[in-house]
Length: 389
Image (cartoon, rainbow, N blue to C red):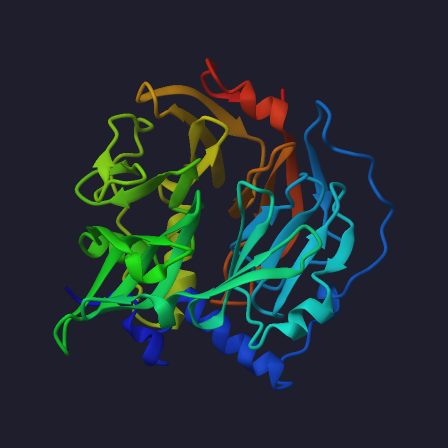
């Protein structure tokens, strides 16, 4: 199989994560400085959004480039990874900047180039840094455990050489990764289940399917989710569907339930050079497709987009994996070109982003739509109603 992420060693064919690391390296060397619009400014603190009202909130500090976020364990602060400026930004429920993760914490971690973050079941955070390092941060953002997946993830002549999309499933990480071996020239890409306590004991769940998946998984969307220790993957093959891996098993098995009209992979332009990315993302804006998978409480949620009136109709589809049924759909009241979605215990954050003009840094991120958790729960039994009405 051709390796999905081989351009990590080829500067002419950069994926979104690789480009972010390259930009961060420039920033660390003094080659990048935050623009004026990215500087923190004081804004009045908006009263708590965690009531019955949805709110569009302007950000007091705009991230340069973000595709990953998490809520703190108590649901009080929203964290967004800004890979352009090498920060993990903290926001209050009202959108006011709470500064970033303390500089002293960042300085204690060598090569602090954050790329993804997730909240663990115990309320701690799991942060991915450069070179496949995963760091657990406690509720005060103090590092409590570190694991180098690339250095420790080797077994039987097979080595994990990259880890891109991932989510936490109990004490494991489920990831889309590159593998090298067992032969000296063998390369492959697959979904893995990796125990955080022993990365060498990883399980290959499923090889990555064909070219359609290869391009779509490079776009930066959240296509891996979890409910407790069970992991779910959204796969683009002949048909788009969700696959499930139960802890202790060694495979991914398909669910039947999936949103109508979104079960065919979109036809997108080729994405081989970094200059292709804005063209591909412009095509995404005109596509009907699933652009996210999330686990929350006992249900799965699929984020969908459909062209509508020169913009996008955003939808959130609830799926009960226990009964394998679609149990509700809702419309998200946003006209954003692109979204990064961060589910939380008290609210969901829909980070509203503009059109992509360049890979890795030329995209406006001005506002967040906060939706109270109570409104997410009410999706059950509804059909395409506005989630905020």
